[in-house]
Length: 63
Image (cartoon, rainbow, N blue to C red; front, top):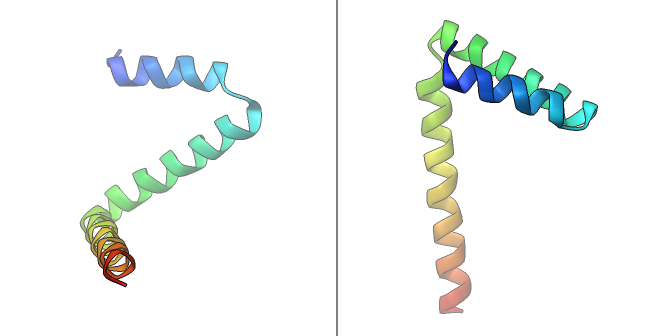
């Protein structure tokens, strides 16, 4: 079994039930995005948000 799957299986048993359920839901959504080829779009949005955050932080420093 893949090491990542083994670690995830262990963590899902250790975490509180509500946390484990959230992780399951996130993983399900990631799998669906991967099947639809949507991960590149998600990655682009994350990078875009990081840039916007940096701009906001820069504005705060320069104010």
